[in-house]
Image (cartoon, rainbow over all chains, first blue to last red):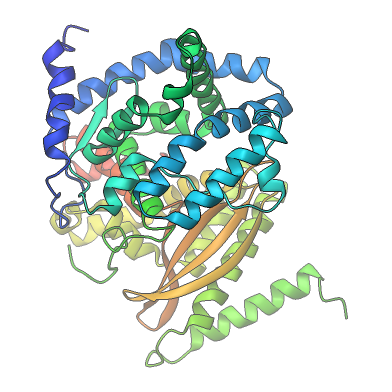
Length: 245
Length: 200
């Protein structure tokens, strides 16, 4: 654990704001100049998973039935709506912002505070959005790959997005201070729920892959590019079968 | 005539695949051929995972499906990365042979998770060297996800080259795994080949 000095952990965090602005070299498969540090943090995250997150995911699976787990997912997804609406607006996606607002209103009222997803049942689309996506729409490049303690790997752009989304969540402004602990607790339960729902892929990547760091980096980056590219494979990831190595 | 008779469908699929294989090398790959290939692969995969075959029996069937519908030598070469250049002709042959079984086990165990799934081809678009065919995989009680198949014109044959699951390239993933296996063996290709014969 001595390898995790303040410097190794926080230097990448401090550098993020600057690096997010630097466009990565598109010809390179991955822009990962801090691989040595990232790998140390990755090992730390794996230890956290083994000791805390995986057991929490198992406990979640034991406690929640499929039905209650779905309600839980609905509730946390509804709590994320103000943040999504804010990002829809920042991306000038007015139509999506309207749909998201309507969805939030419907699920909060008719859906019993968000426990039931009546909006989806009524046929409304659900568009995910975050500040990393907003930065992408604004033309900010992917930046370097960084593995954050407790949050696994993401791009510099995605990391800035994460910090902004957590710090400037519109919901914080209207949540009375005495409930902020409840909100934190809910986030932790949500993490345990995700760990349970995606346990097969988590275990595969972290414990069965030949190189868990490289595998996680690959999965994250390609999946994120796909997501930002509206569900299409980016040209960078679509290999030309005929080029000679 | 029962349109859903599986054996009849399989025979028809087999005939149409055979026609594709026999197509003149000069004819460029079409969108219809690319989608047909994926329809065939998908129905074969679904038939395997929904059968009672598991373990080696299942992997043997996957190996046959890949030998028929995928450009396994090219996938093997691309999965080895830069080390391919340094390999001798006999090492390359031994590596490709070992890769066939490895691919059946590693891709096959991925498909095994699709048991009971419905897979439908949704659309396709032209891309470098061929087509990218989109399909939707729906597993019971889970939200559907996207599998995209890169189909190429391989020396006049229509073959699968790569598969993307929610944007993640299975070829890139295999390259990461094999690269790491090679590193752990000090870059020794012969040791990698010996390991691949049982790995997966």
